[in-house]
Picture 1 (tube, rainbow, N blue to C red):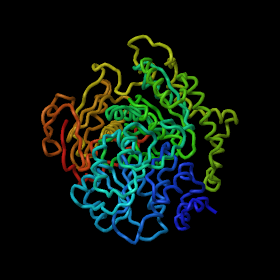
Picture 2 (cartoon, rainbow, N blue to C red; picture 1 turned 60 degrees about the vertical axis):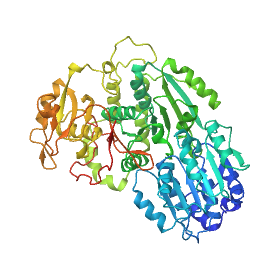
Picture 3 (cartoon, rainbow, N blue to C red; picture 1 turned 90 degrees about the horizontal axis):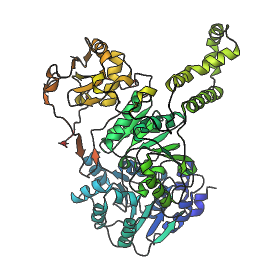
Picture 4 (cartoon, rainbow, N blue to C red; picture 1 turned 90 degrees about the vertical axis):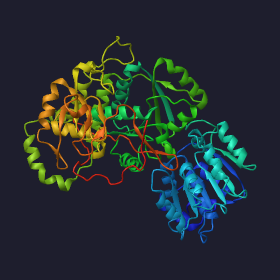
Length: 609
């Protein structure tokens, strides 16, 4: 018998969650569900991310609501659209064997008219981000006068994101008789204040110690010089061949730079930040969940609410300002009882921050050493060996090729064959890390990353070594920097590692290539067409590239600096983001098909900063 029955959950719900793989309740579920099922208490639950909080409040809601009535009875507020969609899908899955359960996700970055239509058809559970929810309330398109339960999920994150006023306004439209359930990973004073304001003698449940991190996470830090940070980061990644991680940066620009640099260096990486549209975000997250991305480069805001299984590492490329943010970052790994590693790459001046985070978490961090080039090559070699040893052989399919394979290798001994097979990938790392410096030791001033094969995100070579080229393709052709990099490399057959800064505009773009590659690039585009129109390459400043570009039709005025940003009605940013490509050798390959049509849905409002 499934233990959830003993908690008071009825059979049709237990059958549904059993099919989802729920065998035993997590500690937060075991302790909170019996309390919440009474429906008579306000509730505060403190538990780390990844401990099963959605089921802890979702299952009791399904027991307590009257699904014969088609009006809002429960409101769940959460900080991000990602978490909003996740909670909505989870509750739908829990209730799939029940009848007439209507759950609507309300979030910015998606069509508000679609959401309004779903609400109008009838809904019992509304899952929402605060900005879009307030927008719908202001339109008088929803009635919360009969709401029985309000759930504030990831309350600390909502307050960190500045949603205090929105939450106050939303809760003012709900009846005083409702019960409020608050779930949070940490308990800063702001969360304590909201609990005191909206709750009456709540039942408080704390799993572990307040504001502490997951016990299954190892915390490490590496001290490097600022100029060596990217080189050290790559070496850490290479030292962990099976890494499936999230890399946290401080700003949107930094996420784009790191993702673009990794793409050039042949890694499966992409960026996730608040300026991505919902469609772009969904596309990136689908690739990450499918594990076609090895590394997700994200800002704090973008990564909040991400729930992806088996994340092995969280890497803090830049440390957060608050201990609570570090707790949320590291909580992306070691979910559902798994183990994980949280790594911070810092300079000597940031040691004080590490000590502050240690005190906040009540955990000692381990000072680790950047692996040497030899260490990386050894780790990669044995990773290859293990993969060969454990590979599943399709006997039926390979049988027909075995005679030819045996003929091909008949002059090799077993030892020769093993050495050659293992060297296919090993040689690449051996060449790359040949004469690699010890990044833990001081390096002489002015030394370039490229000198030892380790490249900085934007390239450290002097301007004189590169030529800036103009191309009459841009964002209106659905190009971002990653896509354009792949297109340039595929067309001109140059390595993505050699391409410098890429600057995508509306109907045109600029990119830098080494002086020696200029003729090869221009020759590669000779006679090239994109969607039926000629592609033009010019040296920047030698034509229309520095004034108006009308080659693709339209003639947009070029403006330097800034970036475009949209805001949905709910105040959540979207659009204008970078999307990298897949790893595929030196050219960066694995990019989208450029023969498709342009999107019809253009941004409704645009503002330039």
